Picture 1: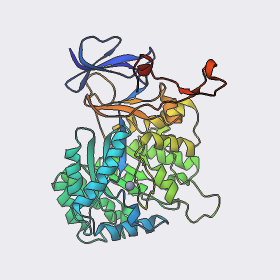
Picture 2 (picture 1 turned 180 degrees about the horizontal axis):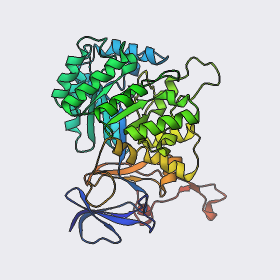
Picture 3 (picture 1 turned 135 degrees about the vertical axis):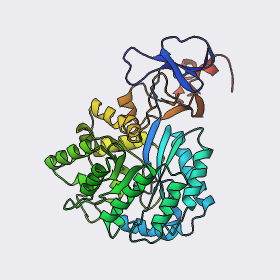
Length: 433
Ligand SMILES: [Zn+2]
């Protein structure tokens, strides 16, 4: 007897039509046609079912501060503005804003998130404490991993390292770095790896976030990864410089990243908004070609980054929208390319985050999202909406599919021009509103 059976589900990789998914104790126990005995059942009505979106790079702590900001310029201005504002962030303020953004993400079908948390003498551990609380309070809907990092540099910011170490000691899931804001980028990278080794943590750098290909910190990160033997445990975000190099150079760097086991997260919404500000025409896109790196064997994800702040004054938390945005910007239109974009907001970020229990397969947690689509490539192309989600077999959200209300003429009323709505099945069965 299953606790729940989700019936008539179209799975992205299954060729033989819709199937049932049987769930016991929050785990997928069976996938097949016409599964029997269930205490409860739901139907996907033939729609596409995905294993939940995975956001590998999201700043919950500084989301929803747009109404406090005046910056509308480039990266440096955004960092300076948040630096000023965060001195006044309280734990409850961070919690409330982060919760608002997290709920948006849950309603968009996101079920696993790596969130970056700023740690430095200005904010101390207040954001970290707020997000630890949020992680516990929303564990029923989303797996949240906290990546602590010094946004404003490490060696140039006395006190930052002691706080970072305190956060690692207090249960941070991984550590990040931001060498481009440090006066000593190499020293910054070395210290982050030293702390990662001390606490046995994965590493995630904000890296090479401009369009000058003349120099890159990527070389230092590759060297440090190899030296620490940390392959498979390192990710870099943005790397917008990779959008400013010719294909042969990109291929060489992609090969080195793949060999070193370094994953790449591209943040299209932020990169499009902040890059190329010096141009007043033919503005470069500034979005690293994630799909090309993926072809070279690099684990690549697309992620949200910021929501409603000076880095990105937009955001609905939808990773499907980000996948579509990337396809649009990268000029991808073929079916296989759309599926690659979907992979980069689902399976690839799960691999980046080393989730070994991700995917719709027997034995994995029953994390399931029903999309208002029947085809995976079309779901990205059309930015299909998620209609219902289950985390470990428990329903976490639902929304009604939209419904057209079309005027209709009765032959007898044609002269009078009377109209009536098309009825839903429920109404046609004799029920009245
Ligand atoms: Zn970021």
